[in-house]
Figure 1 (cartoon, protein in one colour):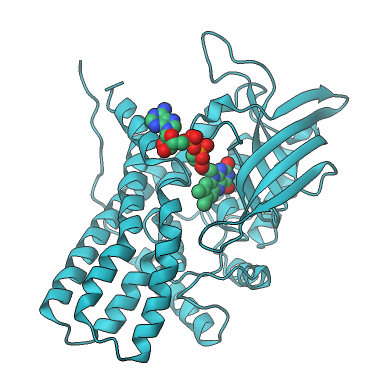
Figure 2 (tube, helix red, strand yellow; figure 1 turned 60 degrees about the horizontal axis):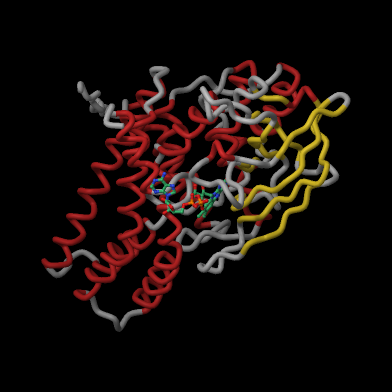
Length: 387
Ligand SMILES: Cc1cc2nc3c(=O)[nH]c(=O)nc-3n(C[C@H](O)[C@H](O)[C@H](O)COP(=O)(O)OP(=O)(O)OC[C@H]3O[C@@H](n4cnc5c(N)ncnc54)[C@H](O)[C@@H]3O)c2cc1C
């Protein structure tokens, strides 16, 4: 059997992209200095997220890659990469627009009706529309195509009944792009029978029940649909054919720097604590961690280049997510070991400990959200022609 190969073409970020990085970094530094947010621990204060989204929008950094016709800037995925990377490294409060900018907007641009696009996309661009992802259900997470939450025909549209779960920010969201069962699967194609709709979260018949995470964070929900009506024009793509766009959406979701930077604050704090003349054993540990992070970044930048070239690097994105989430998951523990070689008698250490405990608490979820390690390895094996 001939196996396919995986490609990560090396790519250097051009000078104009690096200039954008400096601009974003200056903006973030001034926001931190002004006390807009704390870069050490992400905030759950939604007012902070809303205010920040407006500021980012006013700089033109939401929908950076989208067509001008929909309010975008037609800039490259590399530009988007650096904006995103700087925001994530600083734990910036991007939750209002993050999902919409990354995947919901691009999905609408490709598959929604012109009416929906002209109504919804401008709200994303100005930082006013928050999106959530309605894929997982109580009995179907990894096996997305086993979804049961049902959309049945009604005059002028569809009625939705059932529930979604683990839906991040559903309680704040204005819209969901959800995957609903409109027909049974066929024997030829078990992915058949699911349809994507844009759901207005204020529709009567939708209830969000918050689920608490072990980290103390309360940002995901069970979303219950009880005869919620969705008009026909909110269809995205083809009836029964949502599997086509669902896979593309996952390539956007899996390859970005959010897949290795969620616990980055622990490393930043360690470097602060190490100071100018660290113990050689500490310097060695930091060197290793930074070298690994650099490799992950190069892979992720390479994928941004492939997206820019119009390709769909599904397997490569799965590799970045697999390696990246395992790395960020282990980071708090590795940072804890490296910190054996620092002095504990400083105020900086207390601060470091606080961040370390928080990152350790969020670590378990990192290899589950966006597709588990086992599922990603299945995707990679399929991409290589091994299954
Ligand atoms: C913090 C967080 C945020 C999330 N946000 C969202 C969101 O906004 N929207 C959304 O739709 N979902 C969201 N999810 C859900 C997430 O996508 C699912 O949890 C994930 O896909 C796994 O599905 P599951 O929980 O049903 O686990 P299961 O699919 O039941 O898996 C359980 C275990 O079995 C393994 N397994 C399952 N199938 C196979 C197989 N074929 N081969 C080998 N092993 C297998 C899995 O790897 C896992 O270890 C979020 C999850 C988390 C943790």
